[in-house]
Image (cartoon, rainbow, N blue to C red; front, side, top):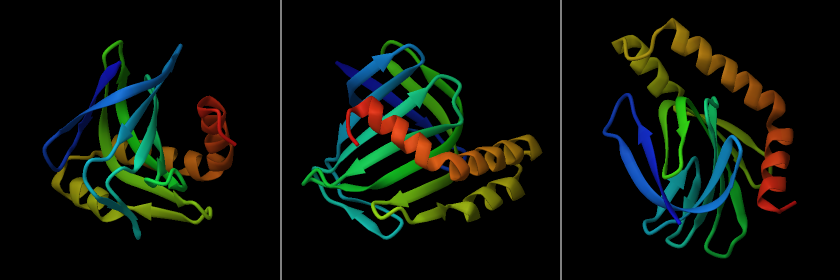
Length: 159
């Protein structure tokens, strides 16, 4: 079954992707997406055929991606801090709040796109409440990342 992912942005056009439903349970959905284009996160390159498993929770403060190369080896985890996360029968949707947290396969953590957050705040696209939300999500993810990733692995059936 295909599910539409809609990623709304503050500073560029929205993106939409059709993804395969991997798992659904009360309150969450996991989608699977195989890349048809090369990509990059932090210093890590993703080749065509790389697979992403994406975890969405209605009302959640982040979307979590588990990213694998075409050889199915773990490349890392990407947390997209967001709000207005909607999970329905045929789509998932969220507003990307720009700040991402990348954790590579060796467990090294990087904060990405803080400059974009600052630029949007300066332009008035993010207000004080948004900035406080982003800071809370960032702190929670950093503090609990090992448990969050472990719980996601349990959902996926991987260690």
